[in-house]
Amino acid sequence: AILVSVSLMVSMAIMVASFRESLDRWLTRVLPADLYLRAAPAGETAWFSPEDQALIRATPGVKDARFLRAQNLWLDPSRPPVSLLARPVEPAHPDRVLPLVGRWIVPSASEPPPAWVSELVHDVYGFSVGRVVELPIAGAAARFTVAGVWRDYARQNGAIYIPQDVYVALTGDRLANDAALWIEPGRAPGEVEGALRAALGERPGLQLVETGALRALSLSVFDRTFAVTYLLEAIAVLVGLLGISVGTAAQVAARRGEFGMLRHIGVTRGQVAATLGIEGAMVSAVGVALGLALGWVISLVLVQVVNRQSFHWSMDLHVPWAALAVLALALLAAAAGAAVASGRAAMGPDVVRAVREDW
Image (cartoon, rainbow, N blue to C red):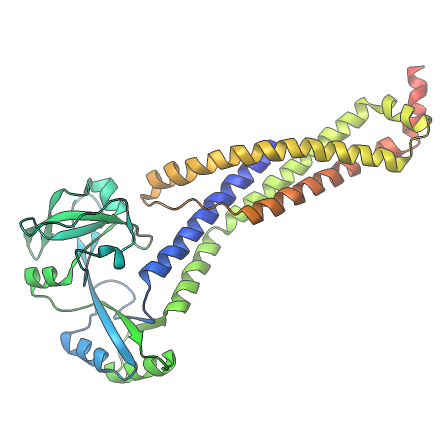
């Protein structure tokens, strides 16, 4: 029981911690600006015109602004569309903007321009690094070289990044859906937000959020989503304690004569309780040690295999050593207490009279 409960607890704890730590690092990487401006909560029904972009750049307190154009891209009619994202990216240094995983390349001047695909697009559509692919943009098939694969936790249907200048050359479209804004030193975000809203006027659906609030919101959504895993871990601990209690009670019933003889020769109730507590702690220590090892192996399968095959995104393995140590020590203490509590029959007068049964 201890082995099963601890292995479940450890594997779930490592998986959730790995996902949360990877998400936190990913948010830090993809949200480098101070403010983020979106024309509409979702879809392509609103945008910032070139004139709007000029107004945003000229707003007092805005040090720098970078814009992103997002569109749906149908690679396969039988599948949901992927997101085509156009933004300024240096082909020689895409890692400054994108959270790349694995190797990446810089296409030569004679090759088609670069495109960086998310892990889902890489897995589902087979867009491997170095492959030349055709993307249906502006009613025509445009050729690109897959220059790298990047990690994306935001778009479940996949996404493809291309340089903004290449997108404009292909489509002539200079609109933008999102803007990343850097604030001048000494300026308050609320002050800049007010100036932006005044410059852009009343627009339904306009969203403006600080980076810290956006990161906090994303992590809080994650915690609420995985709250059930914490309940599963609590249930696993209870299962382990129940196993210790039942096992100790069975041992006491089978060893009534032994405990009766100990009491008969002068062993105190406290000493019997200490014996049971030590036995419970030692048994649970073996279970905890084996459960930690088995849980770590299961977590590797969850993180490296199940998660990648199910959701097509990767994560970095992160072991919450401090939390696991606290949980293991708490389980050892609780197991010793459960053993003492369930074996209290061995400390009563009935166990002394049980010696007579053997005579």
